[in-house]
Image (cartoon, rainbow, N blue to C red):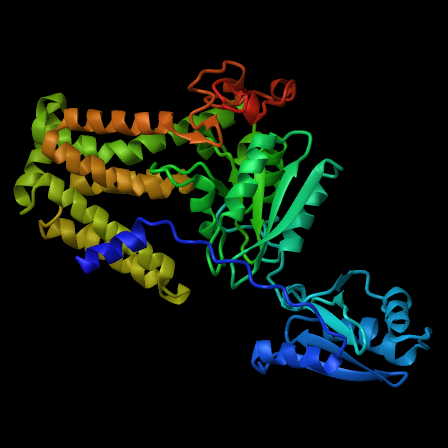
Length: 507
């Protein structure tokens, strides 16, 4: 009983958000302030304190090793304050003269408490402190290494920009600002994680965004009660909501600045987290999973053709294995005679039932996929060769796996990668349909498919129906759903998310 109570406490009770730490302000004693820095960092090896003396006044420059550019620190902070003539009668006046006339760095923030100083110093700032002053100056001299801007590997395109987001937050903000040179573009900064103090930025267009959506996003980010936030996926459950049990997410993710610019121009909100190249977009609709930035660079007829291919690949990837098992087991009369004879002959030679055989191959494929993702790159060819031999040739020739089943699984696997953002729900649904089809037949598949459809239609993303504009139907918005009309028609009017019918924001 104690164990059950413990589980209820862990999984059922909402964890209490830790209280905010007490703010401690600086004293006028430099020695006392520096000692508090050292004590809080526990004499960490990367904490650097350099003492300088200006007109018989003790000063200190406090930095974190590896977070600052030493050359910039020398030319912008240390050299000016040691070689310039400091004017002023009191220590406070000398500090203000150094702040306003000596230090040449453009990024300067005055801090008055240790909490703000800790956040600054661990973000690549240098802290200048002077004895006799109860405030310090944070100078931006960031110089930590980061990956250069390059094409994202997960969203490959044929035309358009090759730039993708990187890990530093300020670089990502610049990539967006370069594309949207508008005063209506706004960035809001905050921090998440009681320990990591990770910077998070909310990006939106002031003249396009709905205040209801924006306020809800702010509340969701403020409700994050994690100690450490190192990836944007940590924020997704909070942006989704507590009562969201759907396999499909109402929060989009992208690594492309042009995609983010297009979404926020429609009234969406982008959430950028420092330290990760993945940017979150809310609200995100179901039809947007089938849209790609390449669609808007191609001819309308070919973009429409590829979009239909994506819809067809989605239904194939979730329904084909289940229908194959259900029809072959319970309704073989539906199949043409030659195909039925091939399947029956293959199943008769294998020791497993058709449902078990299909599940086994899918599990082996998922194991190989995970191995291909995690294995060191030089060993990738070895995994491909082993997989082809074990699953493709040996399993079929030995009679453990039927060739028709292998063909169905291979087609399903290829189709699931046509919409990579939907791979997670697809991988779960195909197992569900195989099991239901092997036990209940076609009627079971119809019931489960209807349940999934109801779940998608009942889902709301920030007050916007998840299936908009298909349900509720909007004829004008359908110009970019099942088909993609030319820009002559798309540019006539911009559809905002709050303008979609059935939206709670509209009401």
